[in-house]
Amino acid sequence: MKCVFSAPQHKHYPESFLVNGLRQENPEMPGRIDKLLEGATALELEMVTPPDYGLGPIARVHTPEYLEFLQNAYKHWQRIPGAAAEITPNIHPTHRDGVYPASVVAQAGYHMADASAPITGETWESALHSAWSAIHASELVLVGEKSAYALCRPPGHHAGADLAGGFCYLNNTAIAAQNLRRKYGSVAILDVDLHHGNGTQDIFYSRNDVLTVSLHADPIRFYPFFWGHASERGEASGLGYNLNFPLPRGTADDGFLAALDKAITRINAFSPEVLVIALGLDAFEGDPFAGLAVTTEGYGRIGKTIAERIPGPTVIIQEGGYLCDELGQNLANFLKGFEAGATK
Ligand code: ZN
Image (cartoon, rainbow, N blue to C red; front, side):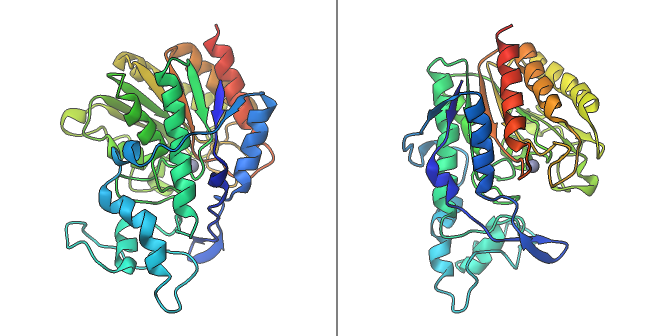
C-alpha cells in the first residue's frame, strides 16, 4: 500500500483552541504528522507525493464562495487594525439564509462553525495539500491499486460544503469519495473517528449514491453535539443512506467491534463498488480527548475486520488522532491488520 503525503501539510500551526471558555493550545498540531509518519515508515509503506490537482476535484464538494474565503480571508483579516494573528469567529448567523456579508469578520462567522478551526497565514496551503493527498490516494485506486492511504493533515470530516469546524477546512474524505464517483457508481464511507463525521454526513445527506456510516462517541454530551445521533438517516432520495452509531463514553474494543459488525452489514447490503475509510485514531484509550477506549491491539482487529468483510478497493483517509506515544503504532496496527485481512 502506498502512503500519500505532501510536506506543506506541516505549515498550518494554529495556536488557539477554546475549551470551556479558555484559550488553550490547539491539539491539531504539526507534530501529529511526525508520529503518523513513524507508523507509515515502520510498515515500510512506499511514500508518494501528490501532484497539483488544482481546485477542480475540491470544487465538486465545496462552494465557490467558501473556497474564495479560505484562500483570501487571512489577507483581508490582516488589514483590520489590531486584529489577532489568526482568524477566529466572534459572531455567527442564527440563520444562514440572510445576505452574504462583505466583511471578513462576518464571513468568518458564516463559514466557521466553531472556534476550533482558526485560520492562519498557512492554513490554505496546508489544507490544499491535504486535499491533494486524499485526491491522489483516490486516483491510485481509480487506476487499479487495491488500496491506498492518504496521510491527511489538517483533517477534514467536520468540514461541510461551505463550513470549517473541528480542526477541519476541506473535507478530504468527501473529496476523495466524490472523485471516485468518476468511475464507481456507488461509494460507501465508513468513519471510525472518535467524533461524528458531521461534515461528510451533511455533504451527502440527500444522496443515495454515497452511503455514509459513522461510529463515534455519543454526541449527546460530546462534540459535535448537534449531529451524529441515530435518528439522522438521510433525507429525500438519501433517506436510509446515512447511518450513525453513537457509542457510550468509554466503549472499548469489543463494544466498538460489535458496532463495526453492524455497520459493515449495512455497507455490504449497499454493495458499494469502492470504500472510503475515514480513519480517525482518536477513539484510542490514551488519546487526549478520552472519549472511547479502543486499544492499540484493537486497531489491528478493526483494520483486519474491515478488509476481510469489505474486500473491494479501499481508500483510507487520515482524520483525527492526537499526540500520544502510541499514535504511530495505532496507525501501523490498523494498516497492518487491514493488509492481513485483505490478503486472506
Ligand atoms: Zn476526531
